[in-house]
Length: 184
View 1: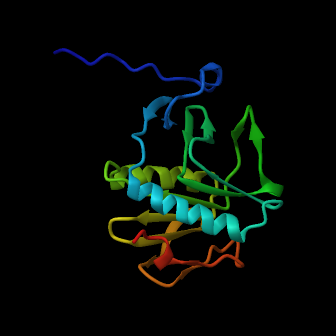
View 2: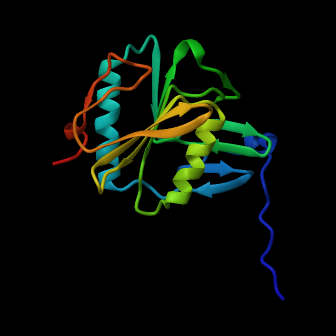
């Protein structure tokens, strides 16, 4: 029986020596996984959320990241994720070798048509492993937001919202009108 060639798993040290990627990618258990470019609806939702967060959070105390950046989950085996949006409290932020090594206060995933529920669940397990206290899983197609909060070391769904206001637990001053997230 023929077998498939083995994929080379990259170590943290090898990864640090690699040139920066042209596109988005994640590393899961040493395997580099390219991510397709975001589609228009995904980007519209992303822009609206980033705008709402940056307008309401003091940049001196919080860092809102989106796009291509590295959130290191673990170095062995190397796992590095790229939440669509991550909000870090600057006082608790740890960076090393140019990458983020601390849990954001909020991680947001915007579902893409190519993303399976299993893929999203794996990302959420990685976020709970580093202690992300809150995550949102946003479905632009269903116009819904699943809010998960860390309870006893597990991210647990606390609400699925289709309207009303989003209020992140770590930033009670922030209010995001769900109706304003979706493009017209």
